[in-house]
Image (cartoon, rainbow, N blue to C red; front, side, top):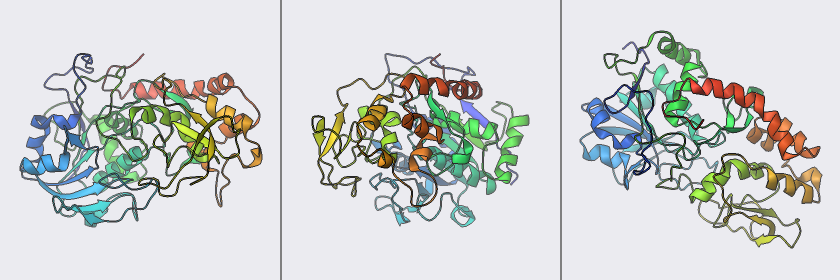
Length: 413
């Protein structure tokens, strides 16, 4: 089958480019719009990329599809596994879902994308994962690899879009592609303000896929595709309802073990930088990414002790009393990254040569989070937050111009 990868964006049954969110009703993820996409899956052997966030109300998408008569033959799972309980970075193996007996292929273990053998008994692929809108959150990388596998193996791909809880702003340093890693692949800022569907359109339209074959398949769309219902179904985004980029969407399910609530989700783009330092980022506490500190900081600061727990079995400074900050009660959805605690922590840290975790090989992990080596040097030389933020602006303005071409929902500005 010759695959002409084309985007069809279903907006109920209208042709409008944007939909205004209805403040009186919550946004609905694309997965809820079963009447639109179930007919496309009937009679097909379906492979679904999903995890514990892939829900319709409180029911996992896999269960909904099977109950609706869809032949789900394979589940693909990302970081943290299909049930979302593995540690960050933990390698996850293949298994079988005990509830449905469908085989699960891990794409966060020995490989990052399905191979031809995984897809030989699959007719259609479906992607439905809740993102949190930070570049170093790995699900956008999973989406890219899944798109490449679909193109390389001539499999139609259906993306069920979900609202981005941090989709109401764009901020942070834009990744320098010489700093590509497992926590950053593309030249986008830390907070990119796009849904999964929009991001998929951008990496396809900009030719950012990593294989020539995939980019050639998507190049047909870029040059020829028309947004027409007569176009064959090859790559389809099912839009959310009642969502726009001014929305504050609250997640119905925690997206990973260490993002247990909306406070953590909002603080994550700011405080995840502590993962590249000697400080605890709060893993092993009840409030990861909202509590952070180190045993060597002043004893008059907030005190806490990380412990081993599910989802954080070996946190930094386990069983050591740390001193730092608790921002649980502070407003987090401010529409910008907050560097104040990172800069203050560096000033107070007594052994500045060891503030940033030293790599055994390769580059500093902090630089992988930042997407460059500049932020670390700015912190070391005492640049103010205002000076650092000003240095981001040229890259952010350039990115915003690219981003605008692929938005499916009304923007925040």
